[in-house]
Length: 326
Image (cartoon, rainbow, N blue to C red; front, side, top):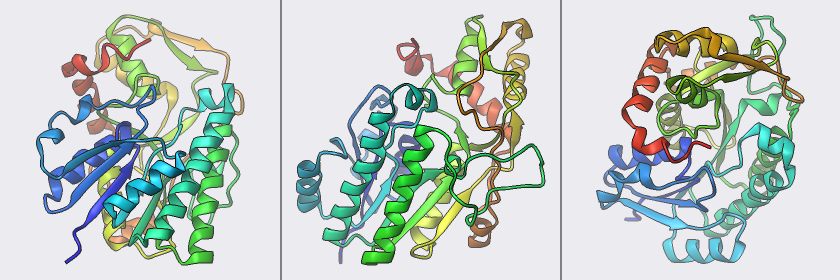
């Protein structure tokens, strides 16, 4: 009997790291390998409990290193790939698009090639709702899996490009794939440059919280553990070749999110500092996850419960984030 050996790329990052922890705990009979280049946003300290488990393994590698990736597959014979590894910070992509193309597009191609050669049973490509572009402020409109791709930032353009490569490997070679597109994630172990942890840590330290424009841009927030459960379901029950949107039904303006955190921590809204808007800043994202819900998934966290859990986690885990702040 072939053992299930799942390779998780980007497992030292935020979402990938939470997924590794989730899988190691839930599936003791699976061997969970995660691969990461350990760039600025990746670290292994989040896995200090998982490291005690016999089904946890780490491989340091860059997904663009074709020779190393192929030799690793040859040695390990992975049965499944869940591909999180990506450069993901929009502001960094505006400043330096090249690394986003290299990692997100060329790195994905390397993984597709090796998965095809070694006959993986499932290749899940974790993408983003940002590939769809933006919605207006009409709250009756949502992204579906059939929404045309219209990315507006170098980051989202690189993810859309990799999505199309993944689709092409299914259509051309029959590689068993799924593409998932999620809304904004939040929760434990998120790098402090992102909106929610940045706000929490600045407020805790009585520092100004920067807000782009007027803070009216809207995002749909998804707790990272709900995201992990969705990918778990798709890994086991997703129909080959299908795209699944993963959304949390938790739309909030950026200024609402920031004020929620400030008020929960009992601080003054005078900490808010409005700054010039981001280039190409999308107005609104909102996902219709009906297709995934028909498969059997529903989010367990509302934003109100999830944000409290997240604030508490950052307050209780200073050991993890204190050295990661700029």
